[in-house]
Every structure is written in C-alpha cells, then in structure tokens.
Image (cartoon, rainbow, N blue to C red; front, side, top):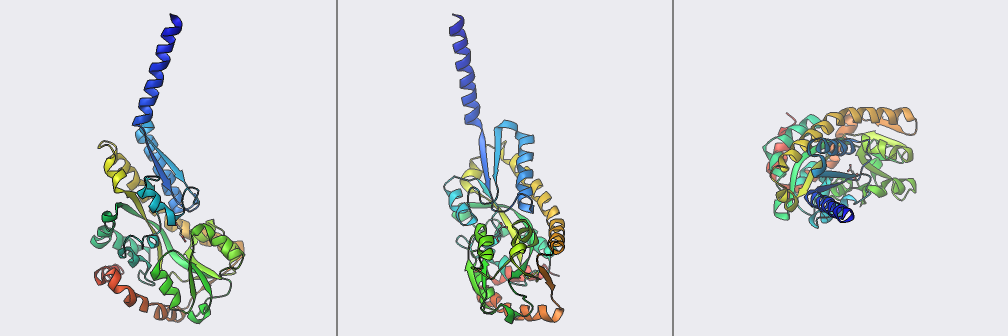
Length: 327
Ligand code: SIN
C-alpha cells in the first residue's frame, strides 16, 4: 500500500514537472560576437533580467561566437522557430529589406550621437517595422560603434586600397563602397574573418574597435586606419509568430528587460570602443593611422557616389533624415 501511495506521489510530481515544463518558454538568443562586447554583454544582461523577473517561466539561452548560427543563417532559423532572438548587424538584412541599407552608406553619420538621433527619430522607428511583411519584428537598435579599416598595408589615400581584397558583411552597399576605391569586396561570415586574414586569403576588412579587439584581427593586420567611415549597429529582432504567441503577462516583462539590456549595451558601447582601441594601440601588434582632414576628405569624395547609386533602393527621405541627424 505504502509503495502504491509513493507511486502515486511520484506520478503526481512527474505530472507537475511535465506541466511546468510545458508552461516554460525558452528563448534562444544567437549571436556571432564574443561575450566581452556590447552585444555579448547586452545578451547576458537580458538573460539575467529575465531570470530575475520571470524565474522558471522563461529561460533565456545565449549562444555567442556563432555557436548556434552564423548571421547569414540566423534569420532563416528564426523563421523556422529554431531561434527566437538575434541581433544581426544592420548590414545583414538585405535579403529582407533594402531600407536598412541606409546605415551602410559611407560617411553618412558624423558620429554615434547622430546615429542614435536617427534611430530614435520617426524614420528610424519606422524602420523597426520594415520587415513585418516577412514575419520579423525589430525590437530595438543596439550600438556597437563606428567602423575602422584594417589591412596588411597602410591605407592613407583611397588609392592605397586599389586591388586589395576586403572582407565585407553581406551588403551590396558595402560592396559598392569598396568598389568605389577599386578594391575587391568579398562577402564572408564573421566567423571566418580571422582565418582569412591570418592566411592572407584577404588583405583587409572593416570593423569596430570592439570586434577588431575581441576577435584579435589586430594581431593579423599590420595597419588600422581610424577612418570612422561607417556605422556597425544591430537590430534586435524576433519572429512575429513567436512574439505574438507569447502570453500577455509575459511579453511586456520580456520587452522591458530587453529595453533595459539594450540601454545598458548602448551605454557601454562607447566606453568599450575607447578601451579596446587603447588596448590595441598598447599591444604594439599593429600601427594605428589617423587621417588628416584632407586625407579623410579624399576618402569621402571617392565613396560618396555610393549614396546616389542606392538612393532609389533606400529612399531619399531616409537618407535626408539621416543627414539631418548630424545637425
Ligand atoms: C557583429 O558585430 O555582429 C559581426 C560584424 C561582422 O560581421 O563584421
């Protein structure tokens, strides 16, 4: 009898566990960068906040360093329900919308303050919804920072890039940007960049201080030009099916946690850029070149025709709004 009672209790416990399991929500957050970057830290902070607020009801699993999906696959995986949250670079949405390409136009934003102003303004907020017809919802923008050029040789004048192979993210605007200085752009996943540079299969790349530092690109590139020629920021994205299917008492808590984690990531992004640049300079592994106003103007002049080239795809209204954010 006692045995039967215990059996019933065990079965009840097992049932409770199964029910709890069924009520649980798992959010897989996949990204490609190191944990010690604005995105890595933001994702971990988000997981912490959700755990504090929702306990066992929602679990956030963070997969950094392309462990789960590379950025080129993550949106397909999201559409299939294999991942619920990601924050790909704004340059990686070209298959789904041409509008976000505005962020790739070279020398469009004068600094991160201008980027923030544009993102938080009406046009930037509109862009969060630019892929809803494809089943994706933009939940917010996350900063990384301004991009720098790195190469196996000094890049001081635009002619220095002539004939060099540069890895780029999967963006036609970025391809046009390098073609404008007679360089050869190659679209490759982030996870391959270090090896491509190390083996000299490519000559250079463009990236932020935090990515150049955390992925050790500076150890295999003799020269970095502080060009600040473009922005590398992220769209925190989810699938409409997942988002709309969340229970009504859970969705606002997740959104609040995400907003706070993004604010934290954005706050540390500038400090990280400075600290990582300093660490790279102090490593003595590479030479950092600053451009004179005249040298920078020559890069602007060479690359700016790209704006006109993509005006039809992006929309003049968006480009004008981005330019206005510099004021
Ligand atoms: C990232 O910061 O998420 C990756 C950027 C890149 O692909 O260069």
